[in-house]
Length: 512
Image (cartoon, rainbow, N blue to C red; front, side, top):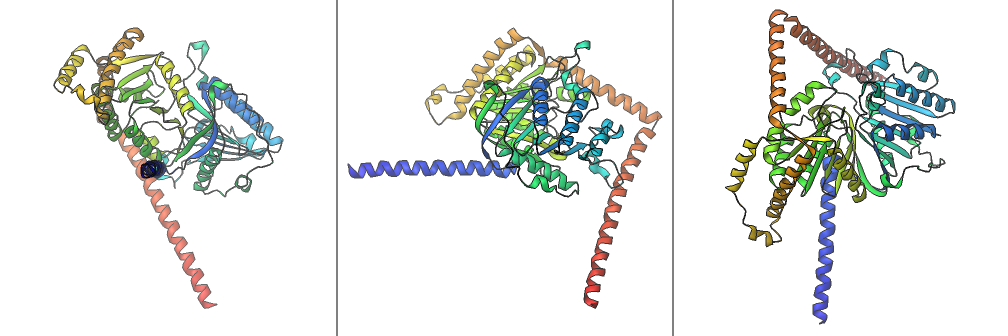
């Protein structure tokens, strides 16, 4: 008996050790993929649309006592933009330090209208990210697409929403408010959001503000007014700060697809993924994962929506499901994997977001928060139309699947996970056909035909224009060559000047 008892103890100890090793390896994979360590024990409030995000922003800004940092793609000059500016002016008069980075392209209207002049005169530190200049070159394509606030070192907001009344829609013209998702963060992750802001500040060649390098420990954190249904405490999360040189979110997005065992639900505003990511989705769907993708039906950038529709068929044939939002615009960027992982932020599933822009996302590892986001996703599907294959395609795929019937005796094998997943996937497909009857559906052929027609006519029109007016191509090429060549030349000349100054300084030291 003693030997048996000792053997059990050793087995349990080994299992605990193995589990710890697996957890460390998982964390290592996440860390190396995203360059972001896990921040523990945070308060996360999920905020939907402008109706919840905008009031939360204003309230937090009004309560600022120490500093306000904003990194924003669009800072509009409309009603809401003016409201935010007025609050910032009031806080500046109260002695609060304000630091703002706005994107030159996204906020070009505010930039040239002098919208920030009153803030600068009041003492705000405001800078445009990557404005057009001779030294910009092709890096002009790299934009700051982040949307974040940091208040007094203790509260942060990360979302897909910008400072623009466009998110409120226009009831007078029957344009509904945009669907979008944001997060209010409190806890250790706030410092990560601040570090991301400081990284941008430094990358712009600006001196780090000393007031932001020292936490404001004397300031009390205001009591949250969030209702219990969307506030989640003790949540673990990591901040993924993507730049044009690291592609952090791309690696993590691919990892998330690989992790999915049961569900992979995605909401994306500008769905134009790389072939690598599309194939990852196809592979997951074929393996029995419930892949659902929610995209806009009408987009504020029309051509992106057109291109997106040409990618549906391969996904649908693999077993993924595609839904188009019935409202004016779904602008959220969100992914949910099983009950274990979700991300919310600014990154779209396209080349620009993954490889060119500065983006900011929060990856959440908290069951309660993820469950709430799943509930929101299911509600969103109720306001969407499913895009489906026509009956002939469905019949053809059914025949192909019949050729590879599964031996369901294998389902008794607890290690045969793939077969279990495929059986569950078949049941999910049966359920989806019932959902389509209730919700309504649209065959992919209609979407695809109109999309290809639009692309074809556009190319033909461009061909005609180039034949009769070749300058429309020549002038942009000349402009790009001029900007690119000028930028490289200026960079080289500055480098040579720096080397000469160093050489002169060394000679001067040697002569002394």
